[in-house]
Image (spheres, helix red, strand yellow):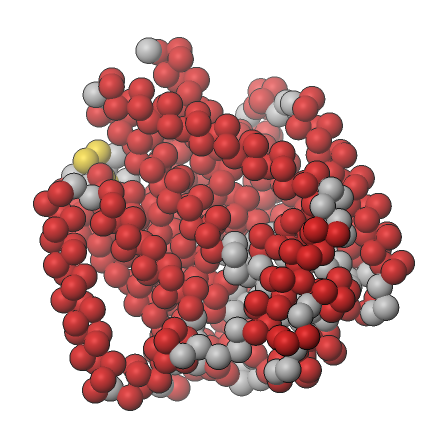
Length: 459
């Protein structure tokens, strides 16, 4: 069952605008079914579902804080229609916290051996391959030709997440056929870029770094081309996503390899990178389509004023409510209040934001403004301790020189790549509350805990 977790997480579309977002999408129900099935088949696994008193207490405090500040923010806002409503938001908050525990305990009961950990990784790689072939590459074709529009629009109608109030994104049947930008099953292209950067690309980078084959569970240089091919496919997709975030992901992935590869392969990669840049420069000056694409989404990008103004508004909101925050989903009122006037003279602000609310333009700003230090602080402390634990495990495995433990070094490396991508890309915006992000990071946390216990018991 572990191999299906990431695949399920891809389906983020909400069915029913009046329902709380967490309860309106499929993953929470499918994960619940998987957990019940696992406990039915192995009733003894229920003993592994334990509640840490400190975590439980902190969760309860943050939940109560959120319910209170949601009520306060709803009472003071002059545009309640820009929020999800006090009842909807309160239910969604409770549901999301419940989803956190659901996914954590699902990973705990499923990932109980190296075999299950390996199945999760193999399932994730297979999911990426299937996702690329069935969804992403047809979307790439649709950005330049209508030949596959029927298939792309069918996938879009059935599974594509959509932004509320932005029908202009999907008016031709799907995001891709309307805007000619690849978005996968996400509501926009930049969200897909973050998804690939946090969930899939780190596992590929780590496999390349170690010449490791997840399907043979060993170092296997003959299989290294397979992971290079997947990495290049992801870069190809990110390029046609036509988003600054996607270009940044390509740059970050390249820098990670330059830093972490051995000297010989680093020199080879650097040479290839220089040749690729020269080729891209030649294409840029000779192919108008590529020139317009790079100008629009990188060199001469327009429309950044809302991102800047929204980020400033969120940070000022946080400075005014540093401890408790203002409630997740209730930052719009405060954004309008604190946004610099110099950033609002643009079409999107006047014709979209003022009619449907000011969306979060920076995830870091949204976390701090929405949850305050009471919500963000303990999470950062928890992740810090997990990082320390992961480094100690990595170093211990390095001294043991045991090839059967190499998998864990590869996955710990992948964990840090994912964390780096998340921390940096959270300066921008994406659908951070999607279950797939909980799945991938709980996988890493549970894996680190499992390996720590194994090393303690056997070595």
